[in-house]
Image (cartoon, rainbow, N blue to C red):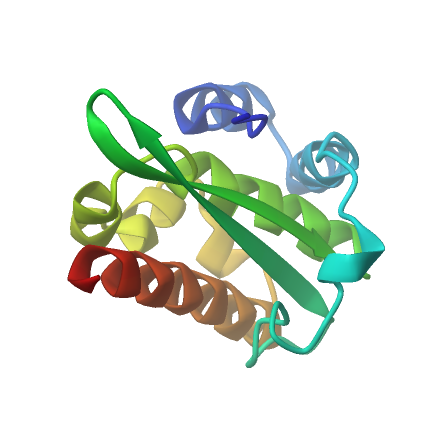
Length: 143
């Protein structure tokens, strides 16, 4: 069910790529590799508010022997943003609500150098995605 790439491998690939043009291409490729996002999920309920581009996020709660985990699927109408969605999913998808709420995604993303190389609007969109995922995790944890 978890089709997002592993964040550690994304970080490794980023370190291997020398310039930001190559990194942007890589981010776009990550977005292309996301699984199809069904049209019935492209609703206002799934839309992430605070993103300039349209971004949708779908959450599945799965019971495992280790407890409940959340699997996320996402999409965007913009290529680079779709790749950023893939990176966010790599950080959070397949984790328990507790782990999600304890994860410092901002510092993980800082290690990629994204903040210095994306627009402020895209940075705001990333924060909005992270907050939406944290909200989903919190509501599952409190249920």
